[in-house]
Length: 202
Image (cartoon, rainbow, N blue to C red):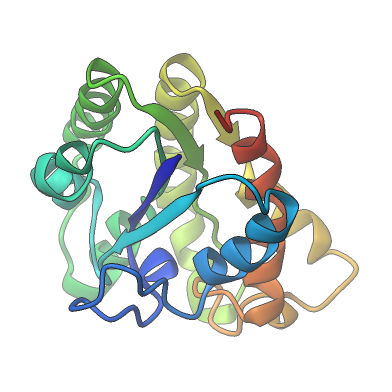
C-alpha cells in the first residue's frame, strides 16, 4: 500500500527533496516508525511530499505530479495554517471564497482518482504573538470542517485536540511558536493519525 503525505512545513519537516524515501524528522517519520512494526508482513510505502510555506492553492497546483501521478492508495493531508500566517506576515487579505473553492477541488481531484483522503485539521496554539490570528483561523476552520467532513474519508480534528491538552499542560510542550510541533506535538499527530490510517490499510 502506498500512502502520500501532502502538506506544508509540518509535513515537510526537513525531508531531502532528492530522496523519495526521505520522510523528514516530524510526524511522518514517527508515524512510519510506529506503523511498520504493526504490519511487518505488509508492503507499506510512505512518501513525504510536504513543502514548507505551502498554502491550499499550492497543493492544488502540484497535486497531479506530486500525488495523483504516484498512484497512491491513500493521501494524508494537513494544510491551511499558512493561509492565516501569510495574512499577518505579508499583509495579504484572505480570500475565503477562493480558499473553499481550492480546497474542494483539491479533494475532489484526489477522490476522482480513486484515492482515499485522510485530512488532518491544522491547528493554532495560544502563543502570545498568535492570539490575534485566531479569528481569521477560525473562519478557515469552519470552511475546512464543512468541506472535509463531507468529502474526505477520514477527518481528524487536531485544533480542538491540541488546545484541549494545552489547558492543563503548557502549550509550548506541543509547539513553541504555536504552529510548528515539538517532538511531543509530532508524536501526538502521529499517534492520532495512525488510527485513521489503519482503518484503510488494504
